Image (cartoon, rainbow, N blue to C red):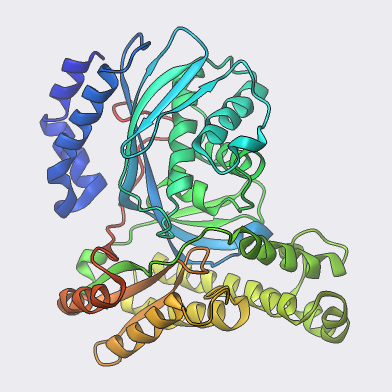
Length: 430
């Protein structure tokens, strides 16, 4: 579709309905202007040829299952209204130009698909790595221009990097392949790229939640991965889900993230297994002394968290199946948060004891919710990141003012959970 025709679709009745589904009542109003600006931006880029196509990849919030996916555990996550939108157009050469609002262009020549140490941690590594993965699948990749915009805040725990990875996977699949690769397979391509090319160890949860969309249970111990989607309507619950960005930096924290799966796997290795999902909880407790001696206490505590967190995910899945009120989840959510703090130990990396942003945010939220109820927990990877909180809707404005007074304007983000994903493998109007 050419630029002018595409822009007209953004103001159509069908687009209005879709924007409402993607962004909720509070966010749909700005979508036509945002998408139109991207179309104009792409039209101004040199080297493009052919129709424009629109792609969307959401950020995600983790409902339960903190740091379990990398050991083939169970999680429940949900796609949110904050997303990465990219409008792409093919090129006639093998160059990819990725232009994103607020960033310098990432330009990659796909003639060379080998990992580059100089690109680790950069968008260029994702572009090159994704092309390499599709090339291994027998897809002859070619270049494209893409003009993108992200509303997923970096460092927010909402998986901004995974959203970019899934967006790129969708673009490669649609412009170079047949556009029919299942969502979970796109997520695996994205995860492998982040592990090998970007240089960050991670499980599959972030990419899978973004690719599948909606609220989704995932059991990574099953082959193929077991998934189940749910309706999760917070607007009718009387509570508002939000995240609080405590202002910490994730710089230099990769070793802390990497230590969690590594230490869990060290306990699995004690039993000559690779993943903790292959080990029974009772067997771990039967060998506590020997595990302490070989693996250390923190590894043992993190293993206990893994087993207990998996059980909490199962309990929440049952509540979602029954369409129980959101408040019925709060006790389980709180236990998950307590376990992350005490056993998993990912609330603070303790690089600077004078500054413990996440712990402070949790303590303040505990104080705030004491009267009106709710729940709160560390969110995502942890270590100087964000917390997640369920706040009574009538109290949310007061909570927002209170927390932003401590952590800065814009630190509190209200989340809207998307009710369902776009069709797997399809672009925006596929």
